[in-house]
Image 1: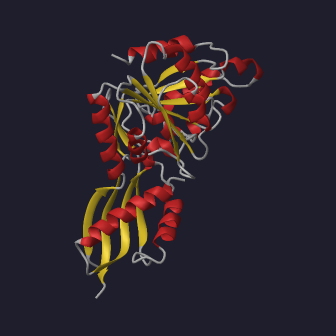
Image 2 (image 1 turned 135 degrees about the vertical axis):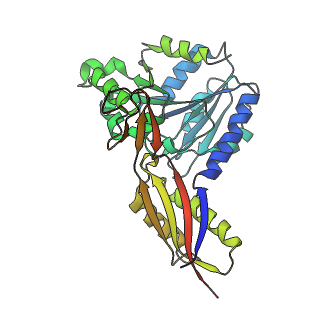
Image 3 (image 1 turned 60 degrees about the vertical axis):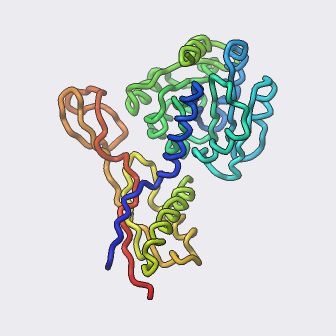
Amino acid sequence: MPVITVERKVMEKNDEVAAELRRHFESRNIHVLNLLSSPGSGKTTLLERTLERIQNTVKVAVIEGDVQTDNDAQRIAEYSIPVVQIVTRGGCHLDALLVRDALSKLDHQKAQLLFIENVGNLVCPAGYDLGEHQKVVIVSTTEGEDKPAKYPKMFHVADVCILNKIDLLPHLDFNVDRFYNNAKKVNPNLTFFECSAKTGQGLDMWIEWLLARIQ
Amino acid sequence: MHEMSIAHDIIAIVNETLKSHPDSRVKTVHLSVGEMVAVVPELLHHAYSAMTSETPLQNSALDIDIIPITAVCSSCQHKFGLDEFEFACPVCNSSDIRILTGNDFYIKELEVEPCR
């Protein structure tokens, strides 16, 4: 049977647009973080506590991704910073094309820091480059210490891992050392932070890291 | 379940390729999928078949070649396969390793037959 050689990357369109976004961010000196986690890890709360601490010193913009509702964008809008909501209507991840569309509706030209809060899901978002500088995966102590072993790809592609809800540790069987070992097995280069977005415990180190990203 | 959007991208590339081969009908789309890509072959087959039904591609199917993850240790140069996602050298235990295969995800070729 005749054969037509193709040799094309399946994700080429996403990768092309992600590269275009990266050039856009570089040219405007915008540092971009892609926030990833399972639903309910406290991503939006962590973002709120972060905004409270940096919004007077840093110009921030936010893209919120959710399957339905603009609840998260409404929460972020309380901080009077530019925010746009992507509703994927069933889509399990953000891709670079969705982010490009969202940016056209977002007043981000003066931003120094852009947070992209991805759809809550530890599988699909791992495969999509959004042109970000770092991927930050957030895990909460209620999820169990074996998350990195169960979702290795996500932890492998992440640059930063934040362990959230550490205020609950006394009530849980979560073994922090075992969690770190599991995560380091799939990605020895991860940078770790641990905090409670609710009580504010541990946030200083994360904020310090964040501010150091902005020139 | 990002297999739907992946199937969508595959179909777009196949249709684009067929533009320069108007006399061909696709029988098989040969894919190379690295194990790092985290695609579930069964789901991708289902998604492709659902999305091509009642289209010119409806009698075509995917052939998925899984490429295992292999790496080389930067410290002792040992080459090895990763059965689990454990990124350390099994010989010297160094975590300074470089992935050789398993990241790629591409359409290799189309098997076609004449349609006129």
